[in-house]
Length: 149
Ligand code: HEC
Image (cartoon, rainbow, N blue to C red; front, side, top):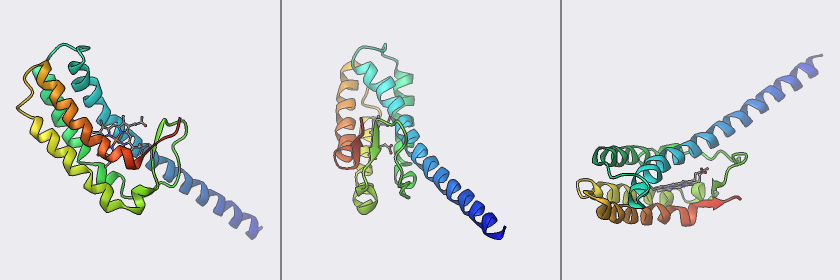
């Protein structure tokens, strides 16, 4: 009886560890989605002529992007050790083998965002900003992001 109770307790404990890891994987993926929203949904869409030029929307997008990118180091502090089910991209294990190097890819993105503020005035300058920021996003993705599908 005690053994059965212990086994059940272990199962519950094991299940909650698995849930915590899925939660973390979801949180990390959601952060990238929150980064993608202002970047692709506003800045890139404007650069491609898919959204009308709207200075207020551009300024808000740059501020949101800066805020969300600033959360990457802390959000990826721990390794979820589990892939998010159905995700198109996932983090490489290298993130946690070289966390200092991973973190060093963030300031160049923040700098590209800060440099773009006040410079984006029309579609042409939006294109320049998108290109400059995207190059820095890829600086991390090329090593630390894995395509799963
Ligand atoms: C320091 C590293 C790093 C930086 C900087 C970074 N990313 Fe990512 N990105 C990742 C990792 C790791 C993933 C894998 C997502 C996961 O954890 O599931 C990812 C995934 C993504 C995805 C796919 C999300 C999905 O649906 O699965 C998008 C879109 C994305 N990043 C956009 C961006 C953009 C735009 C920027 C720049 C403004 C950026 N990222 C900057 C590391 C980074």
